[in-house]
Image (cartoon, rainbow, N blue to C red):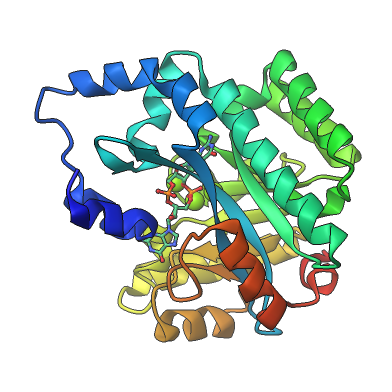
Length: 291
Ligand code: C2E
Ligand code: MG
Ligand code: MG
Ligand code: MG
């Protein structure tokens, strides 16, 4: 890995540029899997927190927890290039539980010092259907002692919700226990509002591919506007991700979007950096997420 790659640790958006991906035909990816346990132990895998802004009040209300792998030789490896493999090899439960642990640890610390922030964790719909995983996750959540309304689960890979029975049962269970639920990457794949109606979620997260076209592309603007209107009619909060400039944030505010996330607001960062940001610019979280 180059020095540039090391410097780009936090600049997720530049990773692709520095990342030397498949020069050996991708064999290194397979080797990577053998290093997973060591990386979980050594701190090479860690969790970054990206701030979320309450658009109405202008305050930070919480963060999304995003996994990071700083490989000792290859440098930072973006999650999109190892998560699919980890999933395929049946290790995604371990990795997700690691992220859940770190998220809970941060939440407990923040709640202990009176910092009222939420944390969102990514869990794939496929994993949600697994009883073992749910039990293990719930055990961690309960023993952490955190107030549960501060925890959001972002459901990724929503294609797996096409056959949603088992996932819906799991979602209902989590919801009844007081955890918030969000549908990630909304607008990609099969996620239509018709099927959304069946999901017991509190929030949808509009994918960055639409958000980034908002100020230039009339069709993206129409899609976002109608999504926000319908989501609100269904009683759902709307998060937009991928906000990279003020123009985009203002356009979303005008469209009545609730929550914003993106490099313009803040990069994914270490927990301590997020704490400083939150102490200086915290919002009233409860009023921001109340449906
Ligand atoms: P996601 O959940 O949709 O997360 C948002 C991604 O957008 C993150 O990429 C974030 O760094 C990036 N992003 C945020 N703001 C901006 C922006 O303004 N511009 C641009 N261009 N990108 C922005 P990241 O961290 O590379 O994560 C990629 C995906 O990997 C995530 O997408 C999520 O699906 C998955 N992922 C990350 N951490 C975990 C984890 O702990 N468990 C699981 N299962 N999946 C994870
Ligand atoms: Mg997410
Ligand atoms: Mg997303
Ligand atoms: Mg994504």
